Length: 193
Image (cartoon, rainbow, N blue to C red; front, side, top):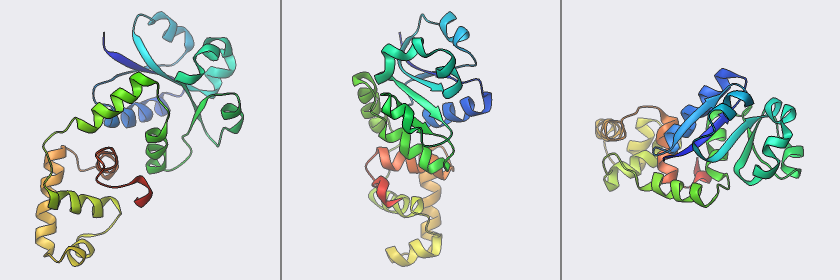
């Protein structure tokens, strides 16, 4: 049975967005979304290693999560200090996408989750060359082609060539996904972004 994440959120758009972010980080994990606690309970034959629950779901069903605090992250539209004080992990989804991704990378997952995080670092599409890693590092910092070329002492067409190779190898042009890959692979420290 595959390990799974459960997202229990009555806000469908929020759940889909979070699922997309989690999918880009944890390639080997099944992620299931539920609009209510009842739907989640009906599908309880899965091996869930972590739960993401919206504040309204928690408020209406506190007993369901009381014993699962370590494995539960509350989806909050704000700082969520009260939830942290109660022992829950908090994901503030009112922030920018890059900041949400940074929060996800810092969540203290259970031992199974840590194993998945280390696997996600090693799951590679195609290995990047050292030069491509350097270009990627500058890309996720937000530098444009000319700035990267000047820093690396190469031409702009060479930077574009490396960018295209990176995107082809990673199978995405989304800078958010590339940034997550760069952090998980140790190409860049999250504080540099």
